[in-house]
Amino acid sequence: MFELSPLGVPLAVAGIAAIVVLAPIVLPQRRAARRTLDESAREFVVAMEVEPDGPLDGKAVADGRLRNLEGVFLVELERDGETILPVAPETILHGRDRLTFVGKADTVLDLQGMRGLRSREAEHYQEFDTHRHTFFEAVVGPGSPLVGQTLKELGFRGQYQAAVVAIHRAGQRVKAKLGAVRLRPGDTLLLISDPGFGNRWRDRSPFLLVSRVGGAPPAVSRKAPLVIGVLAAVVILAGVGLMPILHASLVAAFALVVFGVLTPGEARSAVDLDVILVIAGAFGLAAALEGSGLAGRGASALVAGFGEWGAVGALAGVTLATIALHAIITNNATAVLMFPIAISTGGQLGADPRPFAIAVAIAASAGFLTPIAYQTNVMVYGPGGYRFGDYARLGWILTVIVLLATVLLVPLFWPLQ
Image (cartoon, rainbow, N blue to C red; front, side, top):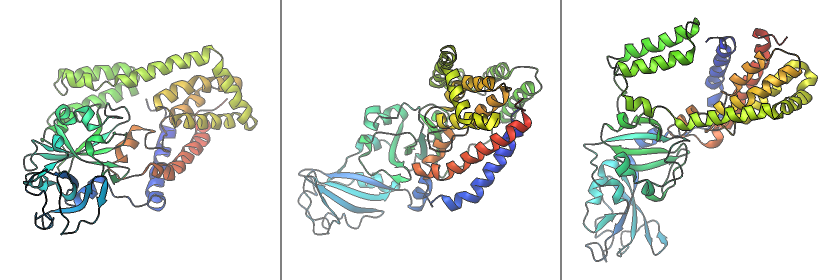
């Protein structure tokens, strides 16, 4: 259970120190989605349209009282594909003119209720009242069913009982028509919904992270000590060797359902079938790599390239190959695919294969170069306001630390011979 600690603990300390010292130096200042929301008093882009033959059709902007709205500012007018910016007070409004306002969330409904205007996003906002509902941040994960689809295609409001009021992508607010934006991994959706939205969708596959904007964290329930006790039991039973960790984990999951911490439905939804299928498929590919001799060829290539520096050089080669593979596939699949190659490499050098397996275990969990390399990377991508390239700025330093720590410490605690 704790066999990796001699390498994992120093690596964690070195990694944290590098982040604390170097992150302020190498990472540009970014504005988090939540900070942007708070500092602008929940300011969002609101898209409206002038009703043909309505009270505003043919009137000047000033006469229609659109210049002095409280909490809302008219920033753009679009007519027949042409954009008028800025919008002068004497500009005459025509039916079907598209008006873009920037305003506070709590004035959106007031704007929508103005005679002569209709919302271009009406299907997303209707039935929601900012006085009775709550704002949430929800991060779209790589395996989410939302990826690649628009809010309109998803029927988002009806399916999730929430309305998207803004989308943040790479630290910037998406200003396109919300219903037509195709969602990507790492997008942060700013939602308005009832207070129960967080409980309904937290830890569910559509969203990697759900947090209430401006709200207090969930209160500790009376069952929290039970959960801590079950977790401690799993660690102790596996740590002292009384029960394999797989068996202990299954018993713990069953106990949480029996004691009412989770419902059977919540337990079932927590099982990510996509991950299980990926791991199962990776095991099949790993068996094929070994059975076809491809693992041996890969090991021979690593030995040829790094073997002149002995077993330590080959260990560095296995670590590098694992890190490179992890940049394009999941950490679980990387570990399974690299395992037979690592074992073959140790065998060809006449070394103990265990240090090579340890190197794969560590390197397959060291995905720092992209926001999609690991789930925790995606969790902070949108809310932190980061850009894709920010991960590489600091990630390459952390990757070098992992490589050096592995090459230096693995032979020390797990002798190669």
